[in-house]
Amino acid sequence: MPKQATHQTKSNPEKNPRRDPTASGQRDASVNRIAAHSYFLLEKFEAGITLTGTEVKSIRAGKANLKDSYGLVKDGELWLLNAHISPYEHGSYSNHEAVRTRKLLMHKGEIQKLLGKTQQKGLTLIPLRLYFKNGRVKVEIALAKGKQLWDKRETERRRTADKEAREAIARSHKGR
Image 1 (tube, rainbow, N blue to C red):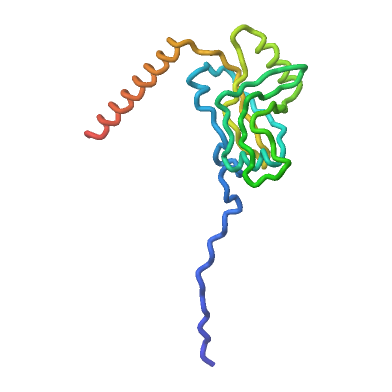
Image 2: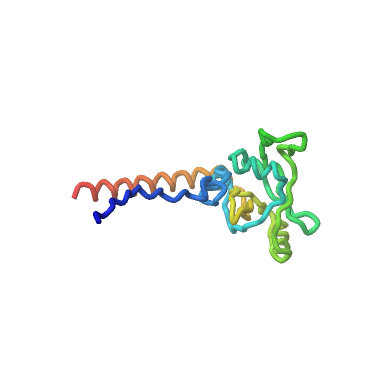
């Protein structure tokens, strides 16, 4: 009996279950780019944040802004002020306010440590980025000290000098 030809099809490549890079934690949902320019970042912390459902959906869509926001320790609790999360475009009457005070979640010991440090002159809490970790929204906050104008200029000069040095090294390696 002749052997039957078997029909082979190309195997379908497996679909990536994490289609959205923001929701899967591969990409930050929001970044405070001005923070490193305006502040010396001394110490970084990770905190959870209490949000409503429409706020989470807006963050997944990339509609969050941390530019003018800051952290505050009040009555033994940590709060995030002035963080702008746009209302969810498909939300109903129960949509959230864009700018509201949101509670940050950290252990009591960490909050007490931050309270002691923020009471020092010139130190404040600045949120650096919003991101997803295991399906939950997290905030990276930093203990920061404000830069003066000359500090900003010095940082810019140093950055420019480093960039020129890297380019010179790359040119010398390329000529070989």
